[in-house]
Length: 287
Picture 1 (cartoon, one colour):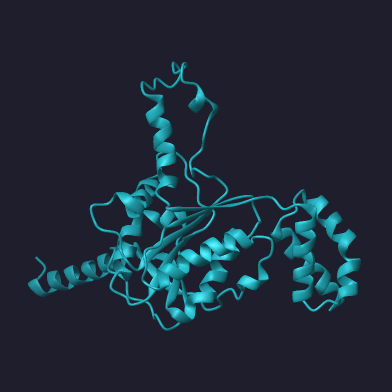
Picture 2 (picture 1 turned 120 degrees about the horizontal axis):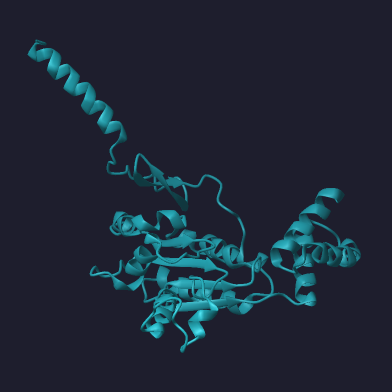
């Protein structure tokens, strides 16, 4: 029979192994290390990691979205000042500046205590714990969910609904959620949703309630900001702005007009992202 000390040693080794794999309370991040943080899963818990190189994009860098810029700027200014403000859903055409606008707003208000936490869709199930983790901090936090959309039945969908509006806990005064999406209602919509008379395939007795469920999440965002595809003139203005940003002369910008249109045609899009990519390519050639 093994002696008592041997059993104790074996038990301690087993506990050490278990502690390494069991979830534990996350360590608080170095809040002074950055103005932006990423939520990352470590040992089963959601931890905040400082972003060492934060995007430097400024509001002046974003062209042809003045209305969208003004609405988000006003909402964020209210939030930073401790006044009532809304969670925001930015939706619309791809590459039109939705995510860039949020990053620019962070740079605008970081000196006034605004901080940003980027959370992947898969980690939204832990969003209530994340909100609780920062609730006592003096800073104002924007939780940033980029390119957000859900399939039906995802657990993170209900967690986000709860944090936005439906939890028994009061909403935290120092946290807002800013999300971007190409879908206005965040969930897939089907033709059958509009067929009130034919439901034999799904067996849905109250189809109207199913449709209401699909739009209920987006309605929990108090502010909707829509982005639209750029016209040719708007696209050319954005190209010119980025070429000027990279130091090209007015003559070089004028000469780049036709090549920039060909570049957009090859990609099937006249978005701000495509304009920026063209400007980087041309600036790199002429540097």
